[in-house]
Length: 405
Ligand code: SF4
Image (cartoon, rainbow, N blue to C red):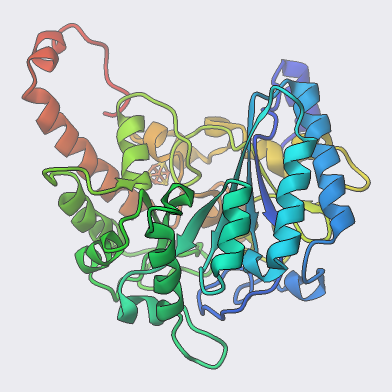
């Protein structure tokens, strides 16, 4: 367990929260079989309010304002999340957006977003999202067969047609500025390039590929944690080799761009890779404060801080040992990761994927070999390209060792 007092005595200071994942609704209109909220270790959603109440939203606005004022925060991001946040309805979404915008202190920029499966998106909801400049991210796993393999209604019907309809609405010129991108969970059963090209059909500004949640106790599908195969690395490499040399950039792929940025010595903005401190907190529908809720895939109760916005300022969460651990970068990693040649790029992978009973979160990611495969492949492509440039040739002999070795 991280000794926060000792760290503070040493002079370490936490990074204030800049990103808030707000659970506007705790239930979902779909029943995706890989969902970390409903289908994994933690079942606490059953006892939380279905929709965040008006007074909880108002209190959240006060806490965010207090936190931003105290720390002089220049910009904040709030993602309306769920469950399925559109289940909260147009009126509650409008109230949340207007309330949060009004609460943020002058001088602090607020970016609002919503992450949805899109099925409920209609003209009225689009009007509210547009009125309050709420940018929309949509979860979709590829073409109809790929998507409907997991993303189904409770009665077994696939959800692709509803999601595709929403994406066609969003891609219209009148709504295009609201369209932030697509979130695709990887399934090894799907052809990677086929999935990527199916996503391109919806003209996304950005695509984010997510490794399915799993850990050393409950490995992801097709990932033998003790095997030497790299099925997820190979899957992503196939897409990288389709995306990277394309004659014109068809979309941004966040994971690849983060890795390239890290290989070139930059910092990460993603939880999937890199060592940057995590400045994100999750607020549940009852106002309780949680770490990343993907930790629900690890064990029951894993994300809970025991704090809530009615009784505690956000600074209390900033000093919670589990939140602090995710801000410590290299110091929070186990021995194997700390000694790894690509640790500054990989960062031990996603925190939830490191969980191993008995070792907590100090093991390497259960995707360790897949991450090595992908990072090494991207690094090789970059080195090949950079070696062809006159600038790289000039500095080759005198430049310090690159971050990536
Ligand atoms: S998870 Fe594996 S590849 Fe990543 S830093 Fe740890 S040991 Fe290295």
